[in-house]
Image 1 (cartoon, rainbow, N blue to C red):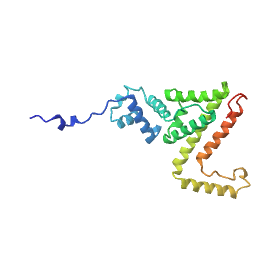
Image 2: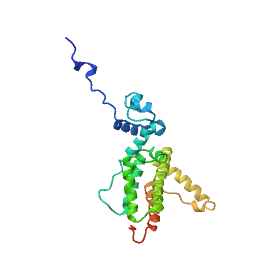
Image 3: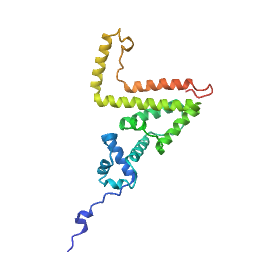
Image 4: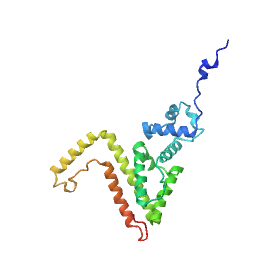
Length: 228
């Protein structure tokens, strides 16, 4: 009697066919684990248990994968359910952007090297520009404000990620800050303007820096603009 199909290996569930969505999901996971330097088409195919050439049915190159993965993580930034003050909106969006870059440390470097033209990035860009336009900014000042805010968040988080990759723990962070603080105090004449070191409150420092930039933007708004 022939053996039943249910007893044979080919009765097992087959691996689902590749799709662009599956490739992007695997790429994000690989980037999170290995960073941008660890992403190759071969490594991505291995993660998907697929042949390397099969990926090229859905993307043309590694650069395509990076663009798609980068746009995918922008989906994690929530869109507001209802309009509110421009300043509150920007703080919320940029705080979420920072959180996304913490979860995906490869993001800051990629955003600095390629145009953000994917649907998720563009949707959030329209909201960003719209909030500042409604507040009263136009022309070069509008472009400069958006660029400054984006650069601030990217730079701040890139520095954070590098710092924590080296320090690893809050205890190590506190130890080095104490050493630097002691050195500056002992040499307070030479380093008079630097005689105090931050307390390691990265969240507070981020919001304080953001407030300073937003204060500058608010000062450029027309009298009829929404300054709050």
